[in-house]
Length: 300
Image 1: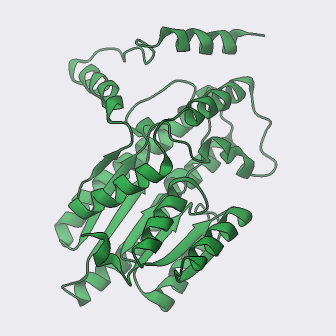
Image 2: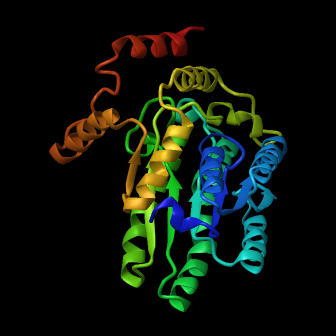
């Protein structure tokens, strides 16, 4: 479906206060859509809401954590009562976390999986039945679900374990969703967004880390610094990725990549699996990065 087909329809976007979420909201607003904007950060959400209302969009804002099942349930009920099932659902909210995998605390696991995985799961379990009901009631109704994963859902870069796990789970969830929906409806599409290093706010997501969480370990500090450097050096913008996402929706494309060149590493991983090889060195083409990381982690 083209952008013109979405005029007057509803887009629900989690993580709408910054990064991909904000850029998706801007495109949806330009297409004449009504917006349900969800974010945990008050100032970012307020700024996004003000911007889109100034652009003439109808906006229904919700300040909440997507990891909070009860808050998500209340939000879904209010959306259904006010605007009905959203035609576009972007399960986009996410947080970043690094560190050696054995150093991730219970709180780290609960926080990252709560947002990155359960946030998507809540969106799927609450809104997919709503969208299916709308489709059943109207043969002309069309919808699309986009889940944001990461290239870290297709690869396993070191010192990013808890994040990798969460994003691999989102890839599995979304591929399964595609197959499950194809059994019951032809009116709802599915896409999986797998960005690489793009300048968004995710490298600063520790600002929303739960109160009382343990102090970051050395490996976590090193991981955050390296991710932040890579993200800030990214040559593809969040706006460009959002444009690619809407283009993919229009054509029914499932996998959406910000950096297709990174697929060479995915191919190597797949060949490792098929041939039963020990996983290849992720820094084979960038030995200087491996040495920098090793030196940083071993420096006492």
